[in-house]
Length: 335
Image 1: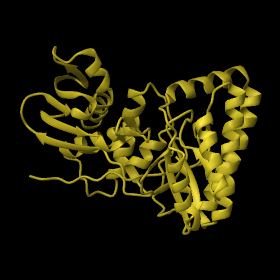
Image 2: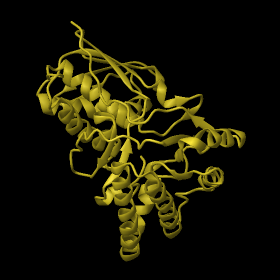
Image 3: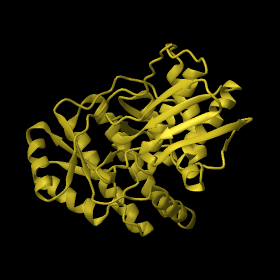
């Protein structure tokens, strides 16, 4: 997420980019029931039957494994509702690219899994993957599944990025257009690990509680974030690098003010320190997502980007190699 954290939940136009970390799902039709192999989340082999649209795990699938498969469970339910039926199959789910060593990166792995599983199940169910509407269908079904798995939390912006790819303007409740937008020429984005993981649901829950207790203050803060996000989206569309970097600086400050008002560290000490290092070498920086921990993104003109990477590594931060604006869901079918 590049711009629009929290404001996206209130309908703000926000900016998101797909990155080159992929969830992969292999479906082999046939056999008996539904078999899931997901070694990256500790599921060697789980077997289930369908009762209508409900996944019924066999007795040897413990509660912990069932919880780790909640996104898969939700995808099956939503695909069955869409297609009316589902045949027996084995699915192998691979998500190793969302982990670096012992770090869970916090770049939307659940949304990527929801999109990949949904796309694979729809293809296995006979939906035409070459149709112009295929990605729209994948988005609609995976958005429903992701919301079901997460109790309605989230805007769907990560599902949009996983489905459509590229660099997108996103408004909650709308299907984004694949506009061909790209990161402006001369601008580089640098992903930095903050040093610890954050629990998105906790951060968002605290902000929602504050919104209910102090609606006027909350609205003023969110209105400001909404204006900045809109300006940043326009700057990205026109390739105006200085204006986009100014919007990033303003948005980071707005997130800091929101965190102070709520009483949570959206811009934590780690994010603040990373921002100081980046700023000292000519770039700008903000957390990406709910904040607190996980990743942040530095925005730097090409002439100083490598210097910023070196300075961050010298301070002990993990700089993650990522490409921005990559392809969304892709399906390959074999007989």
